Image 1 (tube, rainbow, N blue to C red):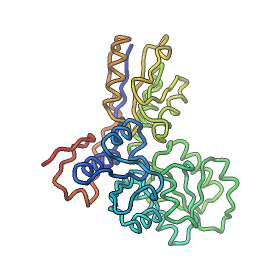
Image 2 (spheres, one colour):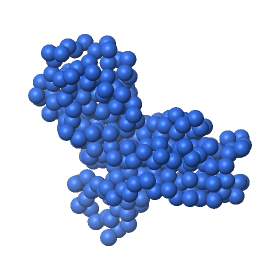
Image 3 (cartoon, helix red, strand yellow):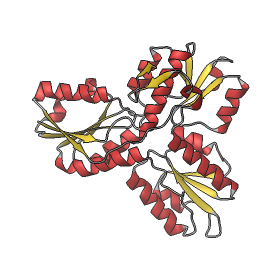
Length: 321
């Protein structure tokens, strides 16, 4: 068996920053530390932090007044920030800067009188946070079919934004529909879909035609990981999304010569390595790393954590300076 190991894969700059932020907080604040929603959408990461005194909550009423609270990489609405202040919580903001960019665009378009069409998935943490910036001005659009049902006309001021973790192809199809129906619609200055999402999707598109099977390491609630598996399946090969090596099934590999492996932007690399080790043991697999694009993006820690004497390594681990 030959393994094609896609690169880039795994942690993006925003996930690295969020995980490093929580590592620093654990070293400098009394536990329990609370996190609003999952710090990133990965079961292993969440469970490992939970074992160390982190409590993940979906409602701020679950957080005792005066506690330390971190906002996840997916961002939060102004209402959540207001409630955190009201409860006198020490708030640490680990929102990915690329998500913050979308929030700022929503605020700007709303102030300028635009009706904003947000392309995304209902219920996703990022979408909830973005819509909270200007709820009276934002309409969620999930599919091409929904474009036809929108109540706007050619006379309305319209702008669109996108969730950062969407499939580029899916987003572009909806954008084309919006432009066809509303030629006056305004776009953000730069694409909202994040660089890491685009790069991982590009690698799958380029490499999937060479494979008999695709494995994507990532959790079921990870939007960007789901998109990678969906893109691979478009090339008429089986594609599986799995949390780690325990999810592997021998029957997947019957008659398979070449396996493509990638990982979503919130999946730790050691899980990829564990899967490869298992395939080596069972199928004498060899590994070929295929680099499609280099990534050198980094994001600094939140200001409140940056001032602490700790050095993030960029792999979810931190060491004192």
